[in-house]
Length: 206
Image 1 (cartoon, rainbow, N blue to C red):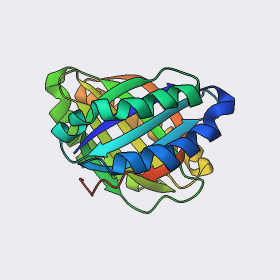
Image 2: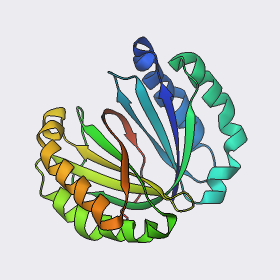
Image 3: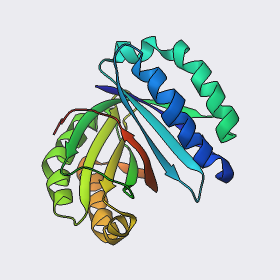
Image 4: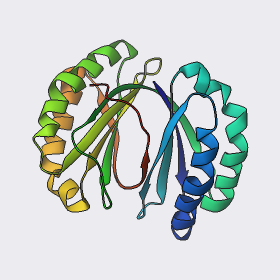
């Protein structure tokens, strides 16, 4: 499974319109493309950072749609008021403990490591980090996406509510530190988001 993430640093007043655009126009258009599994959207209203992630059955299917998605991306520029950055990932781990409902929030952590350590990072996340996350109140799901060539990775952990996410911060800090140390990685960014759209539909990969 593979994913393409499109990140906009949106104008604050454009976020609601952007969410509606992604849900009403982008998602149906992508789902008509061969190999598309689904789409999610997370938004940080304080910074304006919005990340739309589409999931694909194969890397070839994802790459084959590059020209088809460009008009959708161009309209997104008009609505969000910003040029996007694009990242392409392999989806390495997905685990769902419970469904995410209205009010769910997501904490994303970006990591950088030597490319040779990516497989170890996947194993550590699956065998050590996931079981610990399951013990945190309000935990819904978690995923890990990687770029094996560059050594970059991003984990996304969904909580049932913002209160649950905030209450998890100390435990999450500890898990993040331990994982980074175990796989000799650097934490390059951490950000908390509202889960605006949850239609990624990637099967369990734990």
